[in-house]
Amino acid sequence: MGERKIAMKKFGGLVAVLAVVVATGCGVTQTAQSRPVTHRTKLHQNTVIQGYSCAKGYTWFYADGKLNECFVSQETQYGEALIPRGSVIYLKPDGRPDFAMLEHDSEVAGVRCSGGNWLLGPSEGAMTVFYPSGKLEQCWLAGDQSVQGVPCMTAGFIGLFGDGARRDGGAKFYESGKLESCTLAKDFGGKRRGEHFQQGQ
Image 1 (cartoon, rainbow, N blue to C red):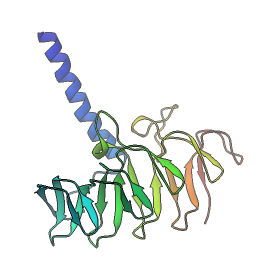
Image 2 (cartoon, rainbow, N blue to C red):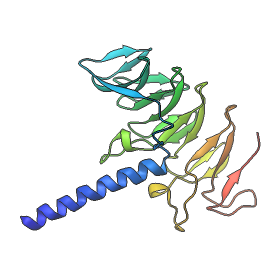
Image 3 (tube, rainbow, N blue to C red):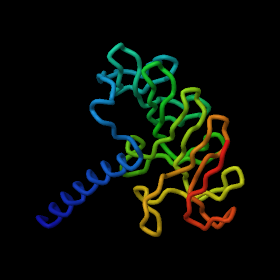
């Protein structure tokens, strides 16, 4: 029994470390100087705040009382995406979209984006980033897929790929909706699989 407890303790520590690494790799962490002041409030029932149906439980607000972050209690329109119930949405201080952590893999603007996982849940998953206009800016791809005719590669575990190199994860888009860049899943346009593909507007 003692050995089992030690093993579980080590596993718990590994999960905590991986959570930090994944969040850092996905660009979640910010310096204390750059992060706006927020405070946490516990909702005792599902509540519509600034047009978003926030689930009961902890919700975060900016110092002026505007919504910063919450889990959504139902499928919700967020920018140009329909965010699944249980996802976490983040708003900029002016109330415009910032990014979301999807409850599960979901289609956004014709692209399948990665959601949370069974171990860590949506709050430790990949970020789906939006322009303030609500247009998709970046999606961590849920599997290799063709994006506007370009064969794009899924991001590997904590942003690492098969050759051990770290690359910018996911597909990036111009605000017009056109694909800006991704890592190639196969040879394409004179570039080899695993190379960075980028195109102009």
